[in-house]
Length: 479
Image (cartoon, rainbow, N blue to C red; front, side, top):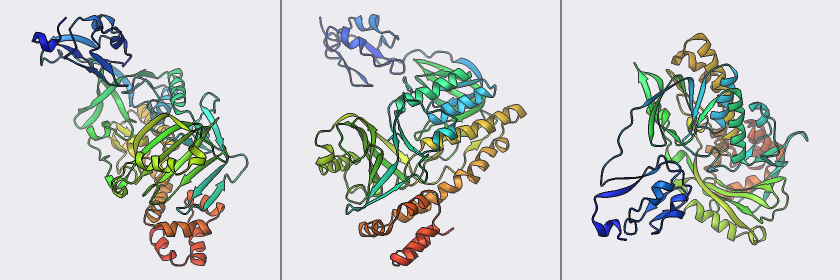
């Protein structure tokens, strides 16, 4: 048989990438090896394709068809769906918010562009001790992989500083996020929420300046979802808040570029400790982390400030770190790798508009020091759900009514985030020798105070043992 290129036919095999679920069935049935699957991208080699149509017959989701050359698929008239609230994004923020809203009696629809909740894992999977209590979740052995008692920080010269929980009752946790997010979605579904996967929200619907719903694309079709409130929980790459006119664009200087391996065979001193490595040679503007998951598994990653990376990628920094620590990694190998970006600056200026609320990473609710966002995402989801439920009961979903969400956030967790931003701006300007000096004088209790936004003890310590740094610290950390 002749290939498409040889025959000169004006018909072509068309791949509907909105419908394709990357199952590989068409690749296995193709007699000409014209189709190749690259994880989440199906490619066609027209020099090999004979247009036999075997793949079309075999495709389980009708993602393949024959169409005239350069023709576009016919537009489908938009279906119309209705809900009280549509949540865009099925991560921790979105699912917790959907659960609480469904429990309040609201009709909730959650849409997510991924075909599997929880993937890809753009996360180091560590959460603070009070996370589950604040989120109203009981820890489950299916997704709780490790309990953390101690954090060990290494200065550029290798000096360690350790600190642990203030109480033996407290633990940090390492989770299996892929399972954890499915667990959260299950709870929301059992509460009454509905989920639509492989559904991309491409625009907002406005009426007289008020957000009234979203336009989504799902499996080759387009739908309109009308709702009293739209909640943007679509992550750091959020489009919905931008489409609604809110300023959520991340600035390069306030962004952390990250790369991570999940590795097996990692040898570390204590599986109930996490390890953080600092220094401009190791991770300029950030740090390297090693978070044990148990049974020699660990997340090993790096986050750096792109403007400080001096031509090297985060992956290159991480590979150098691993090569430089053979005792830990000589028998280790990666079983997964991930990349991503983390905003490490102030929360987005505006979290609400008429008919719209923004939560989680979409609102840049990330700890500026650690880059951690799971805890804050779920707290924001619960807070937004409470305000949204009240607004629905009152029949007022305007900006003024929904602004109670932002007021409550700013008065509570927002204050701590502002303090963490001050601390980040201070540490970001320290040279390696200054970080080494801090490691020599810092104690566990002082580090715990810093993590909780209490700076007085740290400033007194600097005045006594590192007076050269004290004025610099006062400049950034004063109230």
